[in-house]
Length: 368
Image (cartoon, rainbow, N blue to C red):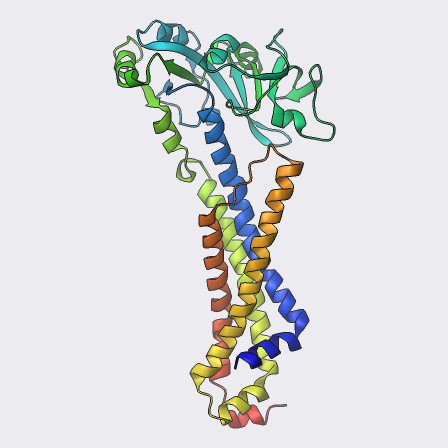
């Protein structure tokens, strides 16, 4: 039976290759969309961890994702926070999402306090020297053909900015502009979306929370530790994440299912006499179903291996050509993609297999 299965695949090489590629495309679609979306989320979490703050303070009306919330509180709240006993630094931020050439968060910062959380490490240039200056990280500076250099003019939020400095990546965003300029651009001057707080001692976080809650006018502010905040940055909390993922997975499964269904259905019709011979020699219905499903399983395994290999090759190429793109291929999603693709392929072959098993041996032998 194994020789028969292998012989059937080799006898029809083009169909076998197309079927395997269909499964591979299914796997690549699932893994690539998950890698891009999870990469964005995990990359954001990693960069947030490098800001230097250990507490996140925001109005209770805003979301955990600062870029998805309006800047609705005064930057002067930072002065109030600075006066509390156990707070070493309080830095206001106004983060806006840009939908330009790529989806990214632009950080509006108060340079002095943001740098005090954890100093920027400049590889070129220096801090802001004017309201229309921007600091970019080394990943952005290395992107695009020829890269970007200090003194160059780039467009952010439909405004021109001069690159004043290039810093090492991993400190929140990839582009930083003065918070006052961000307020002017968004017609919301003097406002912040959240505050990054650095405590004088990590052991005083609970005390700081109580101090903020007991401060007049800040009773309704949400205070979270960095660990609590990062724990909320999950796909379930990101609007549209799971919906987009399910849609892509659904489309991928349909593609794989239809190609395998059409391939195996046609193969069964072409091998009607062969099936009749097998049944006349004593093959049971289960044997016939097994032949079709095992043939499909072999095609699926080849397609899955090809799809996983293509995805990892894509990751390597993207890391070289576009280092600022977070493309995260995780073992959990590889396992999920393998399971989904294999189940879809076998399900697509199930009806053709059952149809083959139900064929009458006499009718099958007389089939032309």
